[in-house]
Amino acid sequence: MSEKLWDGRFAEDTDKVVEKFTSSIAIDRRLYRHDIEGSMAHCRMLARAGILSADEADTLVAGLETIRQEIEEGRFVYDDRLEDIHMHIEDRLSRLVGPAARKLHTARSRNDQVALDARLFLREETGIVIAMLKRLRQVLVDLAHDQLGHVMPGYTHLQRAQPVLLSHHLLAYYEMFTRDSARFADARVRMDVNPLGCAALAGTTFPIDREFTAAQLGLQGVAANSMDAVADRDFMLEFLAAASICMVHFSRLAEELILWSSAEFGFIELPDAFATGSSIMPQKKNPDVPELVRGKTGRVFGDLMALLTTMKSLPLTYNRDMQEDKATLFSTVDTLKSVVEVVARMLPHIRFNTARMHRESDRGFLNATDLADYLVGQGLPFREAHAVVGRAVAHALSQGKELQALRLEELQTFSELIDESVFEALRLEHVVDRRSSMGGTATDSVRGAIQKAREDLQREQVPGDGGGAS
Ligand code: ARG
Image (cartoon, rainbow, N blue to C red; front, side, top):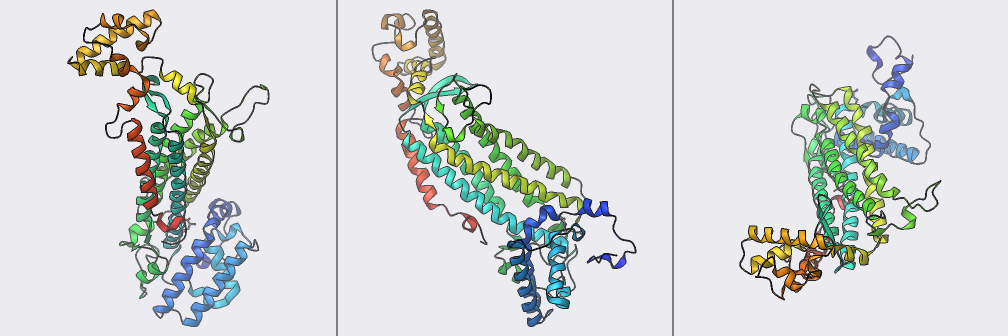
């Protein structure tokens, strides 16, 4: 009969298929560093509370350090029979240091242990994601700065609407990723809490000091209710939800890059190093990187749905269902990081066909609103101006001309309020630069937005310095 850490009350060996089915070591081995860190803090706390002797604690901490090295040097042996990373480490510790290892699990359970490990892991990863997003945001702002002055068509309903600055369009994504960062930072605050010492569900009979454990791990708070602490996976759901929203933004950016790189738009050319060819059509250059960014969004949404569904209706407190949490979490962490990295790398190498963007902004009546605004300036109520311009556009369409290409006399047939100054009002650069309301696309407003973004980025602190403890 194999010796399991919990097999005292069992008379039969675990079925082989069940061992494989219930094992999570292939996935949760990734938590080894956080598990060891948590166990070391627990040991020191037990010694301080007089539950372990100082010698015993030193022996355990040294043993845990050895295990960390064994794992990092690839010398550690994994075995499905030991279920998960917590059992693996405890089992190895007892082989390394003998009887003292049997005391490590005093005043704790795997339920609070796994909750702690996952929090430490995710706190670190969230810091890394925020740091990576910050780099991406810097790239966007630099790009907006370099491209300042170039006009492109702005769209609603994917129909040409009004001209905007390319920089303004890029800064829209800067804003989205800034909110994403704030969401991750906010979720990180709630992650940064110590569940250890809640034990299985009810707390423990030992005189432990959970605040001391928290302080050693740099955790900002201590979970207040032992049942909540072992049953809660909100901190993961929040991360997955923030990641899903972030992926919505990435998929919209990706979609635009895909559209813009098509012959139909012809607004950008993707760098060769970020595109691939076709195995049959020699002329093709496919936007695989943005397509995969768009595609991987599905996986992240799926991870969120999977964990929401797993957690839904679970009775308090811990249920083994919850072991499924880590596969979804790791999948999203990895996917999101790969997406942020590749997009930040690709953006600076995109070639913008600004001449074409400019040309296309001057076609398709993108200045029609400006003619209406001009008439309002001449004293006409907006609704009437709207109708006048509608008739002028219909006329121009029938002539195959743009508004600015109509003769003054032709324009005046729609309203006698129109004079020579109308052509300046219809000029592309003028159309853009008149939109100087706060948050608008005028060159000066966008220049100000770039400046503000740079100052904000400069000031911004990445929580936990993009890794490690806070
Ligand atoms: N591997 C388990 C998990 O990830 C650890 C907690 C196990 N607790 C238990 N009572 N079986 O959820």
